[in-house]
Length: 484
Image (cartoon, rainbow, N blue to C red; front, side, top):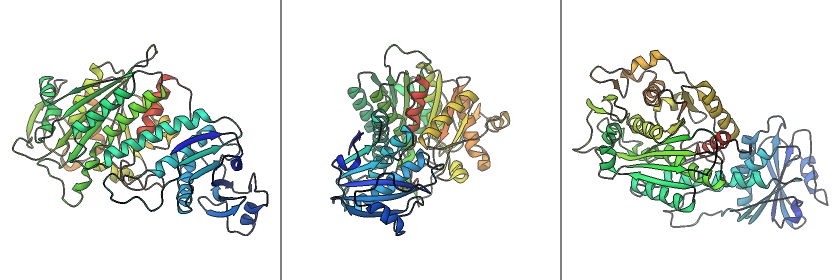
């Protein structure tokens, strides 16, 4: 979809469909020449209640009147939802070019959110479909405003398209989206951006580097594991390098601690954190953000075979910490342990990791929030601010030495899972804390939000959650102008 912003009035943009939002107690800012929109409101067919839709033909085009609810409640997340709802009606009407009239007295962040909501809602994974969708999306979106909103809408387009690219990676079946295919995508991004370089370690290199935790997860799979490192260096910039780490288990059987069969097909989504890190890095480079970034993605399958790790096996991580693997389905933290160490060794001075790590976080937050745990209050506040700006919501959970005690091992330094799944999400974070050490670090457990988010702009399948958050975090870390 082509995205364009303009200061032209909506009728002058050439769009065949125009969306006009209406706040409670405010009415229509710019009516058609014959007053068609006002008449819709007067008749009660159009209403200002949030998400209420009505449309009318006037002046040779369609007009959609969309209720925006209370102006005070209309934040950028509501703008994303409104954009998704409007797109649905525009598709039903057969629109080819859609124009949003930016509501008066809202911010550039709202303008960007309209772009994000539209592009995210327009997404569909159709690679394996034999027939095209019944209602094609418009070919163009125009946002009309009284002032120049070009920078905000352009940045929003980059972030939303990157999120959709991450959805493509995650929605792909595991027989196609192997660790090596993820590494190939990393190489594509490096070829596209001169500021990005890529390095990939295969099984033999991972083992030779002493990454026994990562290697243990990969042992059962015939597919070659890949430790993917993308380095973004825009040149002469100040500030500490940002390390972003993603879990990319491209299919997770659970290993010998095997998962139930009923929903095992969904375990292709266990690489959503890595997909988000990969595509966010490309977006950061596309935007030219003034921050150095080291992105580390641990990609492997977790399979059952005669070579697979057994419950009770003990391995040694790259950091020298020994780990008793008492649950082979708690594999993500093993992958991330060596990835965090690798990111620090590659120069990262602040860390955030993103992973579909625990079922416990789904029980706690459902698909509303992801969990945040971290070792540095100031850094966690920066991450929370990025979440608030992008509508990718986080809720912080505590770390505590008493939780760290729970992962102490009987036969090794630590265990990878506590008995009885007590404080499951927090003890998983304490496991990772051991490898982050004193480097400011935030862990995002995205298991509940990575797919089937239920939002109008990302209802089913992979959500691309976290891509926009990581881009905003990089923007904040580098001191780039705030687009939100």
